[in-house]
Amino acid sequence: TFDEGLRSTKELLSKRVPIFEAALTYKRCYARADILEPVGKDKWNLIEVKSSTELKDVNYPDIAFQYYVYSGAGLKIDKCYLMCIDRSYVRKGDIKPKKLFQKIDITDDIKKTYSKEIEVNVKEMVKAINAKNFIEPGVGPHCSNPYECPLTDQCWSFLPERSVCLLYSNNKLPMALINDGILELAKIPAKYELNAKHRIQVDCEKKGKPHVDPEKVNEFLEMIRYPAYYMDFETCGSAIPLFDNSSPYQQIPFQFSVHVVQKKGAKPTHFSFLAEGTNDPRPEFMAKLKDVMGTKGSVIAFNAGFEMGILKKCADVLPKYKKWVDSMQERIIDLLKPFQAFAYYHPAQDGSCSIKYVLPAMTGKSYDDLEIGDGGTASAEYYRVTFTEDNKDRGKVRKLLEEYCGLDTMGMVDIVNKLYSFTK
Image (cartoon, rainbow, N blue to C red; front, side, top):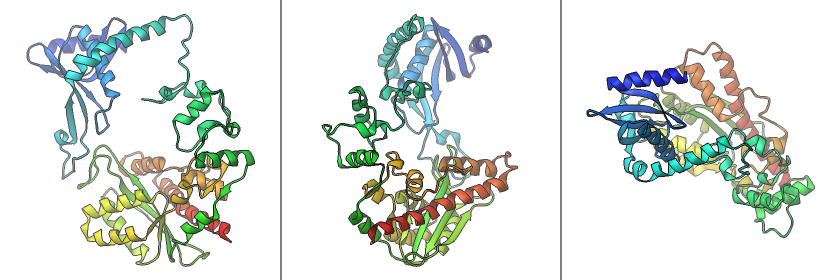
């Protein structure tokens, strides 16, 4: 509890031992830094640990607040550190904690600059807490930066369902429109200077029909050479590398789905792989994928840079596949491109070019009914049933993973077939 934390911290401080989450108060503030490390006879180092791989701007006020409270409570703070993951670390055998983490000294920044700002901020926060009436900050970028506010849905509830926030790839324009009292996407006045893609969105919203540019669609389709291989990977990455020759957060492929179409309009043949066991899946993944992909014909992926990046990283560890990966680079086509170019846009895409929006908008197929319907869940569930003891439903989860990854590639086949229908 709150009081127990304060009591145990006081006891540990007197023993001059490292303390994890030391609880201290100062004025109306309460802080628990990740680590307090004793230095010399009477000083301490303050260490904040993050799972990120770099120092971020938001870390400074966080650590400065802890410094403010601890110093105010009477501790002599010598150094302030951010400890985070070192992404350059490559596992070779047992994990080496001192190499896995990096410790960044930010003492000068905290003591000379941020600690002074914190006192002002604290006064403002206390003023808000003591206020009799609710202080209305208004909506804006601060609602999600640096973190998502838990009241966002409530504060933004004044927006209609089809709001200007659906505008494609734009952060500033929706807020400017909202400030001008324009909330509905379909009601943006003609006087506003919209780019071509935003104008297409507004027109589609008004008409309730998709936009198609047959010429651009045809330019994309003419790049496809048969047999065509529709390819998708699922990956997982963890802060602590699971396998030798891997780094923190490196995406390790554990599954692929490939639908092969021998000629335009032909029924596809499905191939798949889902790693078994706890060994490094990359050797078997690469061997089986190479067997499936043939030597000729287009390789089609949605956001193909991701798949190619995975293959290149695998080839770094398994150099015998380098020439093959280079040949794949020459064959690959990115199905995301025509949607990014707005060669096709449907209002049901809600301003997104993700396959999760494009597929249902174009074909009616959806991920909504799948128990595993997104890459993040796929990664988490694979990790759970493969590397933890919480795996009694392993068989069920593996079937769901096959279903999800298979929909990605079959969905791409359906999308391309739909694009063909616009070029008759």
